[in-house]
Amino acid sequence: QVQLVESGGGLVQPGGSLRLSCTASGSILRIETMSWYRQAPGKERELVAFITSGGTISYADSVKGRFTISRDNAKNTAYLQLNSLKPEDTAVYYCNANVFLPGGTFISSWGQGTQVTVSS
Image (tube, rainbow, N blue to C red):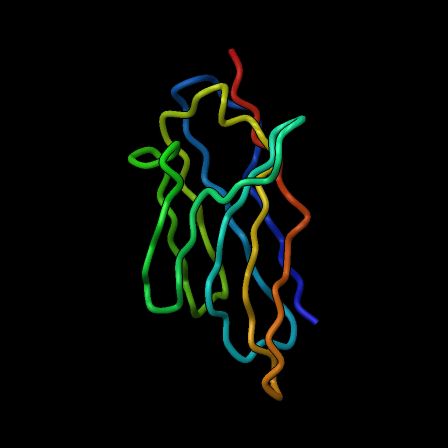
């Protein structure tokens, strides 16, 4: 199986920055797309950004120009740099990875989430 562990969340003032990390471990042959989602109280989970193994990147319109996704394939880790944070960015942020296991099985794995709170 594959485990994803997120870190880097916290409380920050509006306009501040945070850097989230997501590290995958376990029996991994190759990680394809790594994504960040978020879920605010009372709202559905939404896609924030994704990055493919080939480096293709996409962002939700609400975070374009403020958030930056990246990955270190050697470390099986994805990052999300959050800048110019707004109160409406408050949510639990989840990492997702699409992973090929040895033997060819393809799974989608989720982390446990990390809380980001933007408040003065």
